[in-house]
Image (cartoon, rainbow, N blue to C red; front, side, top):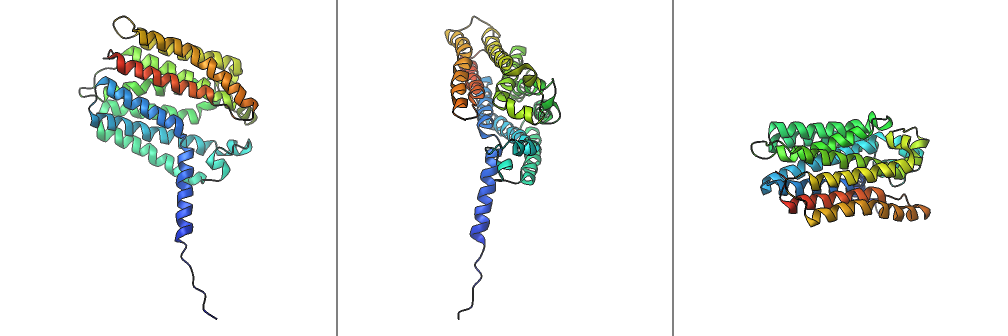
Length: 296
């Protein structure tokens, strides 16, 4: 009888590693992470960054978005498992909670180091403020009436970081910071809408939960519209036709997408149309800024 030969476990290890990497990617909340990174990159182009500056901004923002997404799934693992969130990799067992926790720490450190190494001190401070605020939402502010504040602070700090990262660290326009803060606040209400029922079962009681679904939809739509109006009216000079069209789009997109989301929920889907409406409005707003040429 021929002796048995032990086969290397390389294939198993490779498969396990690939599964872990895919799980980490899914746990990073890739859709909003990519959208916010693209928005930051476009904004960097619009304010006059050179290619190296655009890359520095985009990489720093991407690292911060990864840290926030991984932190969210790491801290919410027990709640996600309790409500059967199979779309969450940690709750579904696709990646370990420990791996996501380690990834959170690595991305947090990378954000601070990238901002410090590739921009100036003032800009790095604002990048750190944005990240710290977003992490504070995941714990402890998510279940409080102040849950909207981290979104407003972090989104408002984003254009401040992008502008301050320019040579000479020019002060960001107040209207730009205000518009981003309004957009972030609207994103909070839209983002929570699909999870209101699951959050109620696990004791999460942020501001959208206290307002309810109808109140949160109104708040999200009003804040998104206010953000776009601020971007159109804030810069010097009369609004362009494109700017006025962006205002009309910001008024129409949320109700239309939420109607589509309602049909999706009836068929058993989570209905993330509300948050995708925010991403769409945000991209339109940034294109408005970049093409308008009136930021600084």
